[in-house]
Image (cartoon, rainbow, N blue to C red; front, side):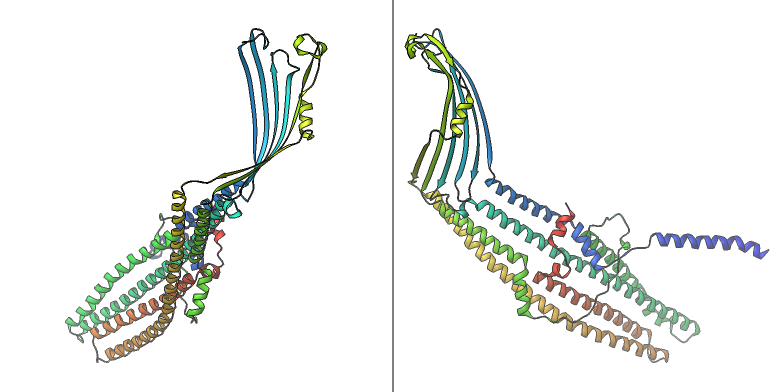
Length: 522
């Protein structure tokens, strides 16, 4: 009977255990390494995404600026029919009528030195009822070559290509800004990741301290029950347990805040339990030799902000050069060569005299003949023209030149300021690495001494030479020593990351390319 009664209860308990294990398996959090978080941040971080679009816009601006040197085609057609009263019987009878059609096609090309070359082909047809014409309708054709070249103002390779050069430099600056964003994001992920690790470990230490305090509290209660400990001695243990519980609540909140910060950087959804992020890495402690002079040399070569400052100087030099060019007089050379052609229906008059008004017949002539004459260079014509314009006042040009010079001088100062900032950051980063390395050793020694002190005090407590108050204090000191040692190790790890960021080599060390972020968001 007892067995039969216990069997359903046993089955129910087994079922609950199985369901609990299944639920635990379904909600098992995935461990994330620091490398995983960095990769996700490169692909998903919203701040990086904003900078990617800025880079793409700058890249498109380069193509847009280069369109200046694309050839352009033109096609024109004009049809016209004019009727007017005749004011002379020689002109026509009652109404003077003229019909015309004009076709033209051309191609023009801007050349890198500021000039422009164009080719055009024109074809015209004129038909009129005017008397005494020997060709009607008349077909005209003309092939023209025109070259315009400024010789002073707007002349030169750099002047004509200024927009392209500035756009290229601006694109490179946008790429450096994207690299800077990636450097900041990678370091932010490192900081958030290790801060999360620290908060989790600090919570674990607090819970461990709570376990020790509760064990001591239980021991004190038993001793009070058997009369070997005064009742008032339990108060310190109870106060310590309550204090640690309050600290645990605070630590749990900070763990969630740290997880939230990490989620934001890697752009994970916030609709899941924050505790699902489980760090898989622990901070390492490997000594790294750093040299200030070497670190400065690497930074001057790799820091994107310094590269952007140098490109900014190039842009300001282009602006200043262009402003000086605009101070010159306008001297333009225009050269033209054209080949005309003419054809049409020839009207045959009596005695070849149009004044007789007697038409004997027509000799047809089509538009193709006029075009053949033009394309065959039957009639050669050319012209060369020089045009000089000297402005009486150059107030505005001088103002533009002064503004460009001020912008150049300002950019030079900004470059020096950026170098100074880099120098200070490198010095601080090197100093932090060296200091935090020493801190780890000191904190390790402090933790080992705290462990020895607690062991000694617990041994004294067992033989009645100490009390709960001293043991609780030593337990608290050990907990603080453990978290302080972990903090020092994390600070050392972060100082190495800060040094890499200050030198501009974080991406290279992690094999991250600037184009990786741009390609992900195509």
